[in-house]
Structures are given as C-alpha cells and as structure tokens.
Length: 273
Image (tube, rainbow, N blue to C red; front, side, top):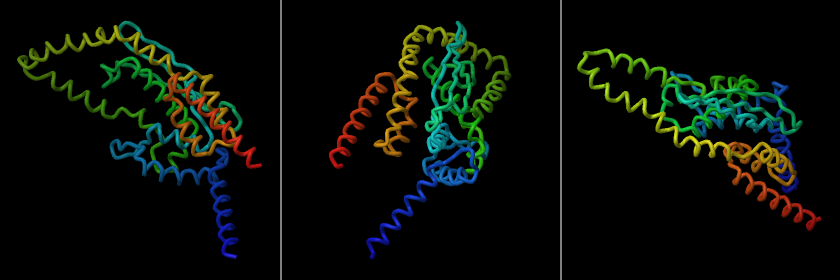
C-alpha cells in the first residue's frame, strides 16, 4: 500500500515538473511559472549586476531563460568592420526554436575598441563582446517581459556601460588644472596613441581565434544530436548554455562524444528490451 502511494506521489511530481518545463512562450500563464524559477536561479547563481541600484541580468541568465523555453542563440554573422584606426565587429544572432526548428527572433550588436574602457582590448575580445551583446539583444527582443516578471531590469547587463560613463568626466576634469600638471600628462599621450599600432601586428592571430569558433553546421549537428530522446534535459541544457563558447576542435569532439553516448544508450535500451 505504501509502495503504491509513493509511486503515485512520484508520478504526480513528474507531471508537475513536465507542466513547468514544457513552456510555451505564447502562453503567459505558463511562462509566469518560468519567471518564478528564473528569479530563484539568477539570484542563487549571481547572474546579475547591480548598476545604480537596479539589477540587470547577465547574458548567461538570459540564455538560461531561453534554454527553458527551447530557444537557442546561434551566431549567424560576424562582420569585421575594422580599419587602420579602429577594431570594430558587427554580430548577428538568430534565436532558434528547437521544437519547430524555426527562427523566432534575432539581434544585432556592435563592439569597438573606441568605446570607453576598451581602448586596449585585443581583436578577439572585441569580436567576442559583439557576439555576447547580440545574444543578449536577441533574447531581450523576445523575452524582456519574462525577465521583468522575474523582478529584473529588461536590459542585458552587457548593454549597460555605466562605469565607463562616470569615469570619462573625471578624466576630463583632471586635464584642466594648472599648466605644470598638464605638461606632466603630455608624455602619456604618445604611449596611448601608440597602443593601436602595437595591437595591429597581433590582429592576424586574434582573427584566427575568431574564425576557429564552432561553425553553424557544427552547431546544427550538435542541436540535432541533443534532440535524441536518450539525451536528458539536464545534459541538453548544459550543452546549449555553452555551445557558443566552443571552438571548431571542441565542437568536433562534442559531436563525436554525443554520437558515442547515443549509440551506447540505444544499444542498452535494445538489450534491455
């Protein structure tokens, strides 16, 4: 009798969990359950930044919300817009619905080393930030109201540049005192101007790093394999949260590992049957 009661309770828990995790973005009553779970997850994992008294969610938090809805960000384009005076990248990210395999949103973003606080960033870092911002922007366009419902500001933290904005006026005021102090600051300027010239020779190396990110074809293959019934939801979520960090070699290894895991588990299921 006790065994049957425990079994019934377990089945009820599974059903409740299924209802919560099978979210449909078009139904606000379902996604409100996600907002509650999201608020807890973001707080426990510190996936937010406090800026001027308001809390902004990091891209990782937005990715978690998307993964719970079966929506994955895929970098569609990464355009090098650099010239001799500036390192600049434009990124486009599409949101892919894993259930329907259709594009359900997109986001564009730019990053430049002329931005406040990024003067000495290497090329790969500028390219990476452009992609990160585009991911946040794409999710914001589709899921901003869910993040707001979770109690956070509906703008990705990576879009906020509060620290840079308050630092710049202090630098300008420091340049206006007596001429003697200004003369002391002069030697520093040539060194600052020389920085882009120093960064230029390493640009080819950084560019190779960007090119070696996992290709769209590799990501599509990983997504296809993750949709296999033998892959657990936890395994799928973990992989999806890190898919945009994979380079070509790691993506290749992940594909091989997934195929091996699927083959082994299907073989075990066949043997058990």
